[in-house]
Image 1: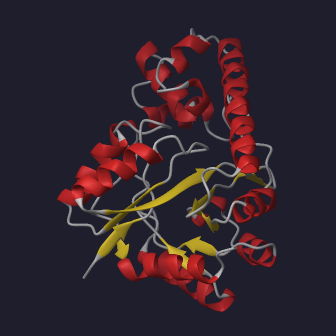
Image 2: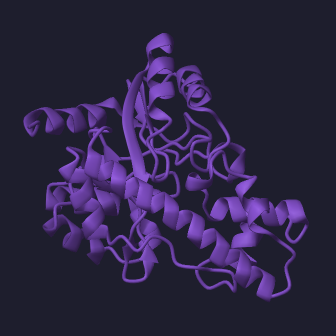
Image 3: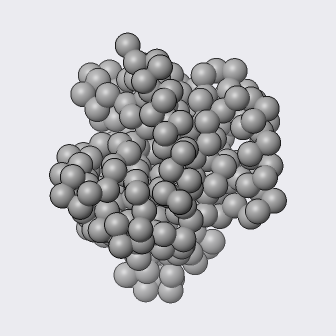
Length: 276
C-alpha cells in the first residue's frame, strides 16, 4: 500500500534536517509522498521540490500556520496553496516579525526569574530569526545548562503555564483558515488533541475549515477513531503524519506514523475541483 507523511519540519523552521534530508528519510522509509509543513514559512519548498524530483518521491507543499483559539495555540496546516500569493506572503512576514518580538519578551521573563539567557542565545539555535520559536528557547536553555532536555524547559519554564511563557500568534484560527483559502490552499486543523476542546472543530468547520489531522503521531487508536468520526460527520478531509522535527524534539521517526496515499489523492481532488 502506498503511504505518506503529511506533517514534517525542516531547518527552515524548528527542525534539524534540511528539506532534502527529510525527503531522503521518507524515500528510505518507502513512502510515496511527503509534505513539508514548516512553521509560518514557505522558504524550504523550492529545495524540497528539487530533491523530490531527483529522488522520485511526491512532495505535498504545505506549511503550519500559527494561530490562536480562546487563548490557546491552534496550528493550521495549509496544503497546496499559492506560494506567490502576495497577501499570504505579507501575512507570513508579519508572523515572522511577531515570532522575533515574542522571543525578546520571553527572554525578559526568563531573566526576571533568574535565568542567564540572551536573545542571541535563542536566535543562534534557529536557521533564521524569522523562523524562531519556543523550541529554540528550550534548546538555548539546555545549552546554558538551566535544564537537561527541551521537554524539561517546557515543563518548568516555557509551557503555557510557565514563568517564561508569552502567547504566540495573535492571528485567530478563523483568520488563518481564511488566509489559507484566499491563497487557494486547504486548511486542516493540526493535532487537535492538544486543544482539549473538540467543539472547536465544529465551529471552525462552519468558518471554512476543510480538514482535520486525525492521524497525528501523538493520537492513540481511540483518539484516531474519534477524529475519524468527527471528520465523517462534518464532511472534512483527513490528514496525518509524524510531526517530525529531527533531533530537536522527541517523537517518532519518519516512516512510523503514515497515512494511506488515498488521503493525498483526496487533497488533490479537492484542489482540482476548486481551482480558480
